[in-house]
Image (cartoon, rainbow, N blue to C red; front, side, top):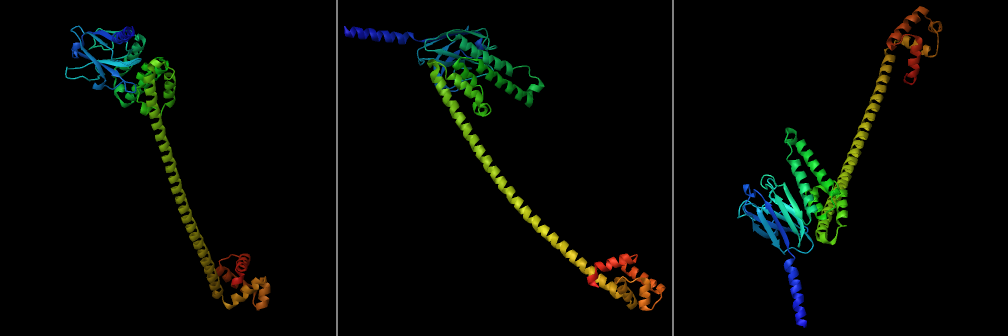
Length: 371
């Protein structure tokens, strides 16, 4: 009896395993204008970049018929929600080729029980003109919506301006804005992770860390079905944030050290300049002082020469002028006529380069100690 129950239990779980399989079907009409009839499905593990393809990721393959019909069936996906990519290749020797122009792939969100159908009217000439129905329909169409927006932006009318460096920068800025606005409005975690990976996270993180923190905050609110992808992506962002902050810290330390070195150099230059200035100032003062002393010596020499140039009578008259004698008084004192005194006095004025008695007395009193 117990063995029969055990058989029933084994059969039950075996049937669950057998019948719990995904199914992706579709029709990619006119695929053969560009692509081979081999089609692959690749499983993108949590933490892997959605934009990178590897042969290691391939979990299934099949062949398209002449009309582009195909079907994948399998039970080799892990429990919970997953991200897969189906893509075409150019020949049977190639099993990995991720192309964007022309586009050869479609990214899908699904689980191990999903039934999804894809319909494309002309996959070679218009790969975005496809319809997705079945499970995760809204999420998969959101992926298509973003890809189509970015495709239209990069393929808009190529005017000379848009081909220029400024034009390319403008397009890049618009592209970033489209992705960021999409992430803010989107509510599907795996689609958000797909969108964010369209940005250069390592380069952009330092410029807009608040955006990435907001994205992570929203992702961490998601349910357990997407936990593995959210957790892996969160760790990736944390590592990038840590690296950026570490580099910024290094830059800050370097800048501080550089500023410190510059300050020391400037201080040294200031001190040197001050020393040179003080030295030159002292030299100038010494030069001025020396010149002044020499000038005074020259003046003293000139004054003595002037005194020596006077006649005996002129010296007598000069002495009396210094004592404030008037012309008449000098004439009486020297027993000379007033006119004679005036004549001598005129010669004294000429020698001392003055015009009158007042100027002469002022000059003599200034240098009185030299007489």
